[in-house]
Length: 325
Length: 261
Image 1 (cartoon, each protein chain N blue to C red):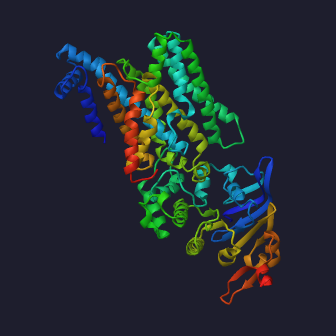
Image 2 (cartoon, rainbow over the protein chains, first blue to last red):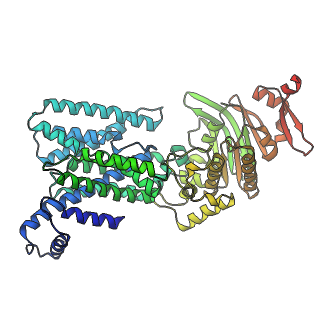
Image 3 (tube, one colour):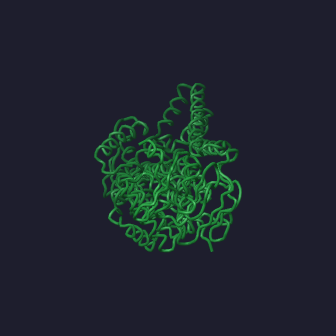
């Protein structure tokens, strides 16, 4: 599976308005690794290292992170219909970005706003849910997420009304549909540490994640502390989502569908499910983003394409899949 | 040394007490049957004994140590819980389900080892269901699920197993199968507490019985001594007679049928 992803990555780099052969790509990469930059064609180098490779890497990172977060959220909420947006991380990030665009902030600041908006919304949801006692904690958490997500959605609408309809409004709309068109060479490197930090608890707790899907009482009786683990896992999955959404905008479907497809293929054990979902999420978003930048003269937003590609694939797997979920 | 002891235990929820003043003691090798009408708090008592919900009064001791002084991993190694057979959301393989019973034997950030897998396989084999290992837990029958959950408790390697109505959803043959397994576990030195709606199970399998009603203990002790027709009729609110069969088993029969015919 990993080898397939590598091949896919290599092919994706060759595709685009400026076609490059696989040999040229490998040659350029070898030169780059050998430190002898400048020997290759300068134009080719610019296309590869400033535009195409950063964008391909961003697609891989965003896809893997969203799929990992979706896998964790679906397990924690014991519901296969949950996506990483359930606690409002995407809506919160959208609001942050919309405010950033409204205030005509530089891209980096807007990304920071989106990141903070995503984390802040989930933190608020968790705080509200903790303050409300005497109910099923997971139910309160979901309801708080829905309510605060709706509130953030209303705020986004308000910002849209206030925004300049010729300049800011299209930027906000485009951001909310997700795109990697504006990927800067440094984006992946600034987001990667956050994704890595978020991934560490998921990898360490991948076995315990299985117990979390049995519900709090059984998990407790089997010897773990679900309340404490849940805070850690939600924080980790939210960190991953908020950081990648900051560079890609809101990309739907990946976090919902990829965990499903991975589960159909390797089963629900997180030991295998987490890596499988991440590889598939990375591959899926890479394919979708490659289509987005090559299909038409203008960029197609990712949020539209993920649905167009994701929905049929999902239905096909649902119809032919052997396993239930 | 008792494997489980409750002293003056009050259980329920804040502002909603369910039961009070329950004393019970279980030794290794014993099977205690918990009986009582619907809604008398059997499940709540179990959750309190397991420390899954906070107790309202009294103490719960495992191996003579208060469970409040133990962390979850230690409690899990001392007592295993077999919930009523349920469906999981995700289709875990039966083998993985049983393997989850080994979690308390490893660190917070560790997964199962080779040794744990062997233990899980042995637990499945002990119950004669090792052929289910690769099947999805969501696709086997209710009786098989109950056996899988018991196998998980065995893999947990605790000296005490608490079973919440292990026979509730089972057909007659599977009830006998499960209760015979329970008897073997006790013979091997484990302590077992189980709840049931069938007093006959207490006569046939239990070494002691605990009858719960109106939020507290109505009778406790040896089944044949304490499960008298008077006590059973009062607690269950229906006329019940206890008859001794030629085979030596005691069974409960509703006397209203006899008078009607």
